[in-house]
Amino acid sequence: MSGFCFFMASSSTAPLVELNHLTFGYGERVILDDISLSVPRGKVTALLGASGGGKTTILRLIGGQIRARSGELLFDGQDVTPMSQAQLYAARRRMGMLFQFGALFADLSVFENVAFPLREHTDLPEPLIRDIVLMKLNAVGLRGARDLMPSEVSGGMARRIALARAIALDPELVMYDEPFSGLDPISLGTAARLIRHLNDSIGMTSIVVSHELEQTFALADHVIILANGKVATQGTPDEVRKSTDPLVYQYVHALPDGPVRFDYPGVTVEQDFGPAATSSLPLKSGAST
Image 1: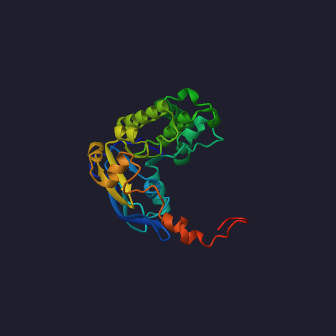
Image 2: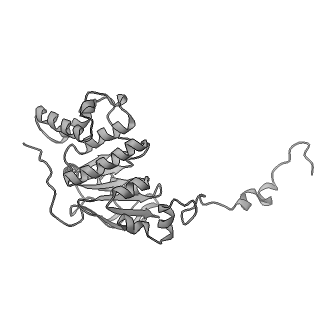
Image 3: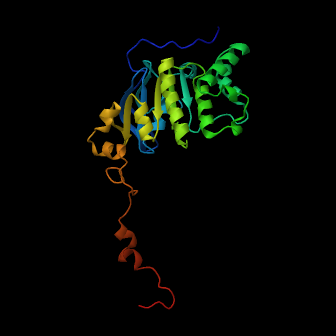
């Protein structure tokens, strides 16, 4: 079958993804500051942290959509940052991505959405594409929905269709960007079970970016929490839960006060509302002095 092969899990014990002293930012704003972490092969790794902490940025760096300022980003031992477009295209064939809210093509049917990566990256005959698409849809419980349009399915179904598309090429790595966002409890539980089942049955590696702590901790083998452009902690879910680091403790237990402040940095309340701020304001007509 020219141009296509089914993925066979590697026997290597080395991490599938490694960041070594990587720095990235926009202009003067640094998002990731000399960060180092690893994603174990064949496991589900949860990437957690406050909004704006760089979680989705790491997914985009792995996929080569953006390039690091310095440091290494290794995918299966190869640095993604200096790759040519041809090398990057080949690496992306070994990755799957489930975007937030699914990102299905609105003008394509469910079947055609899942078939898209197969047609884009392979020269497989149509009968074989049909069989693969139906297999992937069957894996997520939606083989019977193949002829529907994205506008005709629920949010939870759209996420499962997007997952079928993400695994169409039997990737070694699947990245999930907020797979549970906006889902009802039943759909959320279904999505979590699917991620776990597909990871184990196909033998792939998964990275899950999420704010749903309960489901994510139950799902993950390895947890990484980012904060202030650094790795605050990483380890098994139990190890992370037991961390005494104030920032990690605040995040894991959803505390409103701690190292991560509710108020955005600014001048004091006294400076904004005190006599110095109001003395120059004009009095209303008729106001008493």
